[in-house]
Length: 469
Ligand code: 5AD
Ligand code: SF4
Image 1 (spheres, protein in one colour):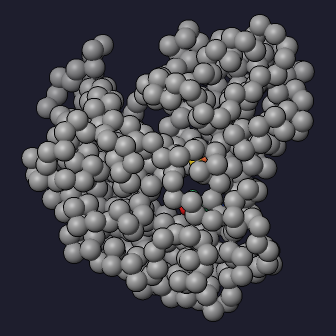
Image 2 (cartoon, protein in one colour; image 1 turned 45 degrees about the horizontal axis):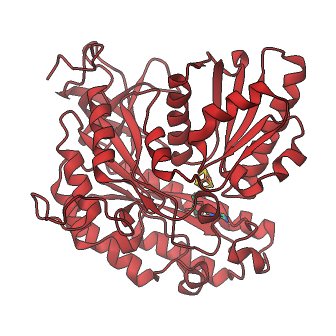
Image 3 (cartoon, rainbow, N blue to C red; image 1 turned 90 degrees about the vertical axis):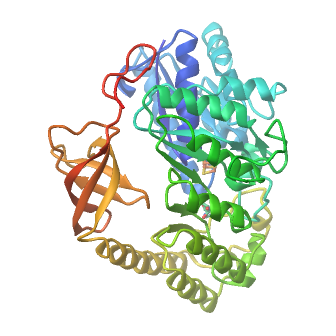
């Protein structure tokens, strides 16, 4: 069947959608040109805030209704985080929905599709897959590979932040064996991928709850902790030029992690380190496990090892009982750290989380006001950071045609800033190039090509071997 996947939510969901596409292809289905010619339509949902759920529910409402008029559309399924959260209630809201598969049961999708084709009853698959490890292996494929790819290193989360739905929908923390991750990374590199982003809710906790390495020996560069060891081993894979990882937590910013970031050239000089609040009282209520002093130390340690490291963050405004003074503390701390970028969210109570039991007592208009102020502050800071790069010659990975302007290409700096540039005739996707930054724009930089540093794959053959380099 021709399938199409619409994806909401975070990088994990994007990765899941890609893995599912590969899984469905292995079971004889094929990717549709687009949503309009799909026979099987999957909506990958997010539960992180009420708004994310409304969006997915709205889309599901429209697409299940479209089944009546568009006869080629045979099945509509909901998948992902919201399915785990709502379970059977999803079918009350969406009577024409054919099936729903939760974030931890995605490997069973091909069988659910088969059953859905065989009979009219709605099918629900949620909860833990009894064959958890088999599940992970099924989800290791990649349908589309471009210049960059995501690789899961850690599923679920054990942290238990009081506002967060993730542990409820994605389950406890499970780290993948290093051998499997590295095999996946090697295969991607052979297919021409130059940059990998390692994903986990709390990625530096990799290997803390499970043994992931076959021996406890120190690595060649003397790392003992599982995550720095993983970075080192991945950096040694031929053809992999850049490594990123997300998301971070201050407790993971150990001396070894700082040393790995500073000493392994492939590791990008960027860390997404969600702060959430700059008030110690709110951080405690959020059960984040650090105060601003600890956060500050983590940043100092990273900056000592990687002086120009870019640090980005997430902030929640309007958490229960957050006062104006506490909001101002967040504002001041953001300025102190000088974040390169920040995502600002209005607090949204998630049923079943501890914070949902507390009064959501910051008025909607006040949340909006706080959100706007932080956004404005950050836009100014982001632009000032970009302006400091004007005149510098910087290395970027050429990703291809820019989404906004077909004449131009785009790429990212090691610090994760987007650069748009006019390509010369020699440049190819996946080349590492030098650009001179000529202008700073609100969300990106304008650069002029200086030259190619390392040429990417030119003509990958069927085996994925490269004939360049
Ligand atoms: N309300 C608002 N924002 C939330 N986030 C997580 N849970 C909530 C919630 N209940 C934000 C956090 C997290 C990001 C992915 O989403 O800032 O880092
Ligand atoms: Fe990602 Fe969390 Fe949304 Fe799930 S609920 S898609 S893990 S942001």
